[in-house]
Image (cartoon, rainbow, N blue to C red; front, side):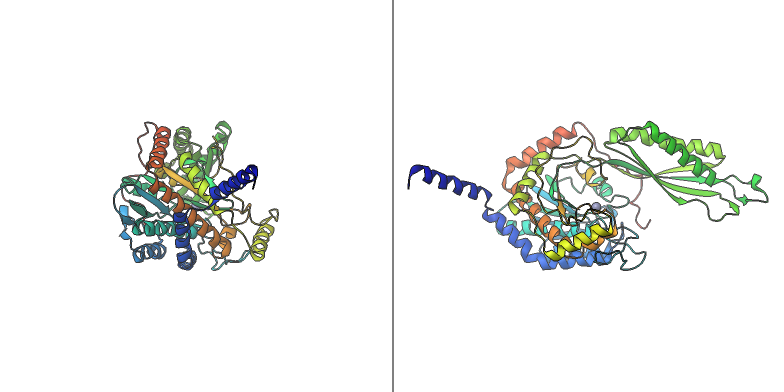
Length: 474
Ligand SMILES: [Zn+2]
């Protein structure tokens, strides 16, 4: 063989070796595969439970019990939240955690089929894929635990069960209780319609309630005796809607009228709104929040009623970690893109047809590692608050067809069939491999922490929550 050809073969061999999955990571993948049927069963049960914020009793128990059955020490009811828990295995440093959510959304019950039909009319559904979220994260923690048990890596792995992401934001109370205080790096993911290491931030936001109290009277016979709480409500929302013209395009203001009076022949003495202000960052959100809050007083003066303001909670934008994200990206690329059957692609296309989207099927490619955008848009998450307390590495994996409307029946439909299951299993593998890298490489942990410290600056974290216990049962 001539030298040139030998060199060529050597080069091909090196490239192929570069893409080969290392032995320990193969073991992590095998572990997730071993637990796959049980993980799918747990996810399907959480899907069927569809329990909403702070009411995830059965779903939390399913995950906590499975962690316990797999040798984790489980502490339940942390931070005075009955459905919050921490599952721990191992000892010493590093401490690597993976968090999991498991709450559903009210009113979007749906069968696991590509046409809209509720499983139970008016009931809740997993329109954000949190049945897959919590289960995949626990699967990753178990795979890592098995590596610690086998003596391949040293340290502590934690699965942190975090309730009420869709409303109230349970992680805020868990952070105040110090749940992540001893954690070096946290890993998380979110179900998505595409697959990539997630290095985009999320929006900061604040939720508050405004109530107006007036005087009831007969709407025709003696309206002059009335002071209308619904007048105040209308004046308030009118003010908010005029204000929209004078705020930055990155700001979002929403309101939900929770009580606008009961009947037409009474001057309403009570009205109530849930108001939300969002922005790319907390710094830009706070002045808008203050102004919208102040406008409630103006509306109350105009309608000659009293008003009451109450904070619900507020969350931070996410601090991204590109160092950790790059490792997650490498692991995704090692795993390679998801593959779908003809039936799954047809299921996806049917959903696209039903939601007026181009019928392109599933988006299985692994997107290249992205630049972090200044204004990412999108939603908000209380993972943002975790990311100001501990470095956080994030991932998104396809569990629904391209362009699927989120928080909708279409996501619920995919969450209890093979499209959702495949994404869940992939997320579990990618996270376990990334956690393994953190256990393996102390320098990587330090680099991830250095980036976190730089981005955080001199910020002193304080959760934006009212005094008193978490709003369980509200
Ligand atoms: Zn979600």
